[in-house]
Length: 246
Length: 44
Image (cartoon, rainbow over all chains, first blue to last red; front, side, top):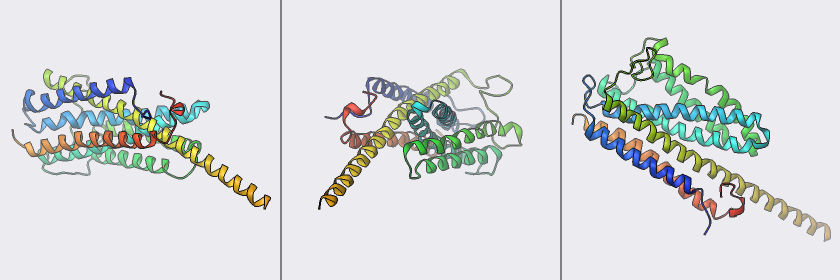
């Protein structure tokens, strides 16, 4: 029986993520009240806001790991795998942010999509990281992949402040932040805030679990590729020896 | 509850997508783990 990508730590992390997520779902649907302005559509916010925050966290993690992969040359591949895994999970979470935001927008604004500054910059951020993942799939050895993708990751992360402050910088249909706003005051009921915070914890735990597993998966892919290449070189050499002998 | 369909769809897509990625990751890891010796897995 071969060992997979899981360890005791990831199993505990996974269990915690499932438990906290179960609490968030129960609280979002059955415990928290409807919002005085948004009504029941606020229940979508307990998924929408945490996925957006964790997508930011994922892209910042990608940039930090990419920075380390450039600076710490003897451990380039380890950091690069974390960067790639974090971007993969970040792209999923950003897509979920756009989808849940669109469904919420239909209920609140009467439309699924508007070319509003926040929505447009978020879509641009999503497309940028899809491009980053595409660049990672270009043929080449893992060292080349690390060099190419780290440059993009270090540039792409600069979009995050633009997305976050787009509602302040331009006239936007999207409301300003209810928690991390420039005034510093929290505009949420206690239980709603606790559920939102629990959602951030649940999605962060899921993010950590997924990144750990996916960076180990990338390591397995790299190891298998190297083993396959070594076998092919050995086979080619033995063919060469055979043809010289004959 | 008003707009239950939209709320269920949002949560269903969110939880379903994350769960699907987790399952696909574990399935791929199982397939690849069998082809790489345990002594080459640095996390063990």
